[in-house]
Length: 245
Image (tube, rainbow, N blue to C red; front, side, top):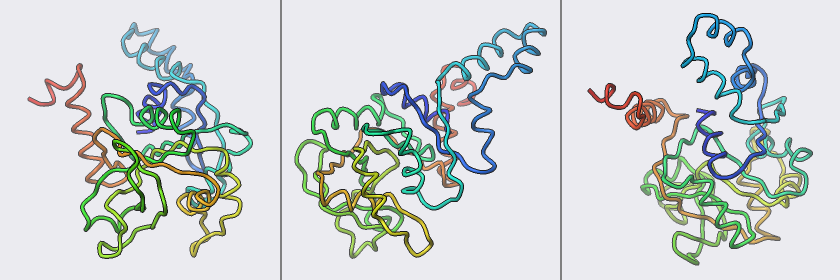
């Protein structure tokens, strides 16, 4: 799942990637690293195709890692990258949200940022009865698929939701978010939420939302993970036909 998010990021034209990890997640670092033992074994056995696959992963990106020592919320995870990001706009990609689209979802957001200079959130329409599962925006439409965000509500009930536009795990943010997150007090569970930080950013900057084109799968949900596995397998040139049969 993380590799898919990395591939979307690279396809969007972003080359400098930071992965926030934590305790027990060293397999992520190993996945994108050179695997000398495995490569030597494959080479000695003449398994050239498998060797190419393994090398392609390690050559995919140059990545920086930073650890979030405690799971203190998405806002906190963004905040720990402050020294690496510095005073640059940056993107946040949540790998659990798998988005399949002709033009990468992140590229769509970056194009909006290039036009507006403001932070951009990916949103999609959801049934009213599902708004309690998402952060939902209150916004005015200012262009095709484009909205100016006025406020955000975390997991509102259907009868109180300001819209049916739910925030999905793709963001392009200005460095101003770091100051806003620094001023955001932890919530009831001691976590700093990115949604709260963006609400604080609204006081000083214009924030936009873009209703992206594409199909989103929630791979953080068991059923969503299965759907994503099947749909993406069917799309593969090397596996799709046999898998479909």
